[in-house]
Amino acid sequence: MKNALQRRNWISRMHLPAAGAALALAAVLASVGVTTQSAQAQTLTTLRSFDGANGSSPRAGLVQAINGNFYGTTADGGTYGDGTVFKITPSGTLTTLHSFDDTDGETPEAGLVQATNGNFYGTTYGGGTYGSGTVFEITPSGTLATLHSFCSQGAPCTDGAYPLAGLIQGSSGDLYGTTYEGGANGDGAVFKITPSGTLTALYSFCSQSACADGFSPSAGLVQGTNGDFYGTAQEGGANGYYGTVFRITPSGTLTTLHSFDGVDGSTPYAGLVQATNGDFYGTTQIGGANLEGTVFKITPGGTLTTLYSFCSKSACTDGEEPIAGLAQATDGNFYGTTSLGGAANTNCIENECGTLFKITPSGTLTTLQFDDTDGATPEATLIQDTNGKLYGITELGGASNAGTVFSLSVGLGQFVETLPASGKVGAAIKILGTSLTGATAVTFNGTAAVFTVVSSSEIATTVPASATSGSVQVVTSSGTLSSNVNFRVTP
Image (cartoon, rainbow, N blue to C red; front, side, top):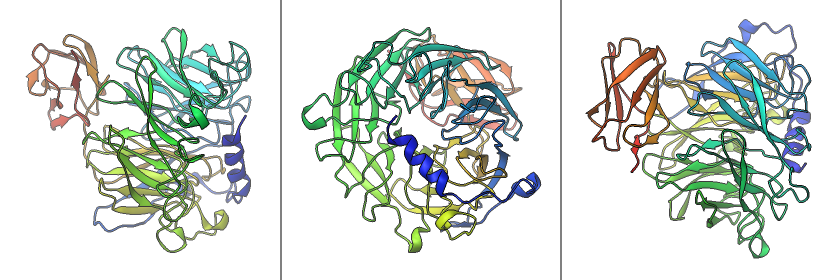
């Protein structure tokens, strides 16, 4: 295995011991202050501390399921010490659904995606039949099936090896992902896999001279509104080892959109998010004006702008080394984390617990700190729940120094989310939300749809005839809820 786990293990070794088991959980359920240029209240609450038995070292973000709960993974811990899949309610009740045992995979570095069939899909970095990682399916109740073990095609593992990233379900219904190693050149691959487990390698990195197309992708893909996928490779590119941003068609034609040069960032560990303005936003782990990472935006055509360079404030109190990607919330701003930096705190090695931050689309950043008891070293992308709050994880810290799950309230209201985010007229669509019981109307960009309220968190509907792309709205007794992103009606 390459340096991704080695780097994380170094962070774990450098971290100071936790305060001890005597620290009561009640003391962990704390709020912390925020240094901000806005009067908007921001409150962080620790919902759960991992303890090893129920998992440890969660490194991937959560996914909000149709049933209103969150699902995620821990890279370590569980019954066999090889990681877990868990469910957690918005109030913090955690259930371990599966403990990996190496034969079915180990070290799930990535999070999950809930497909339209209701099941979850994910990857493990190692384990499986050939020891090079797996793709798995797991039901909401915890029944797991291994769909593919990587390196099944033999050296150099042309089907890929060691997937660090999670999966995305494309508009075709197939799942798409990346592997950190393997492929025809041994430097990573893009693949698609059907929900039943048929895998096709679409692209092998380092296929161009001097690896100008990049190599070692550690992040997953995002499907743009044009139907193509966008992602990052953390190394390679036209300028050496700084990494790239790329576009790839569903059939596997790859175009390098940008090669980082260190000055504009280096080592894009995380993936991208397409904002409501159509541009993509992301982070680089290092590089930039102060060498400690950046936030950037890039147009679909490849024009990149560095919005912020971390360690711009004294002692890097604004954070350093953002490993996670960004989430655009319903206020239009982006929210993210840095794995290190933050205000001085003696509970953390070199006073660096990491930060939460908000950044506007134009690049104005404000910071919230961790203090170890509420978590440390956040490496995962945040998610906004349909109740308006943001949820995330930290790899370390908490009552047992094994990581935490937290919520962040920034005063945003409820909304609805569609699954999937696009579809043809007549396609079955699920609408996720909070307190949907008693809904009286559903519209697609103003066109009324027939619907059924399945539960307080789910509405079943179909794309109505004459519908056009735009906001999906649900009328409830407490008001009208709008979708967080526009629904795209496909031909």
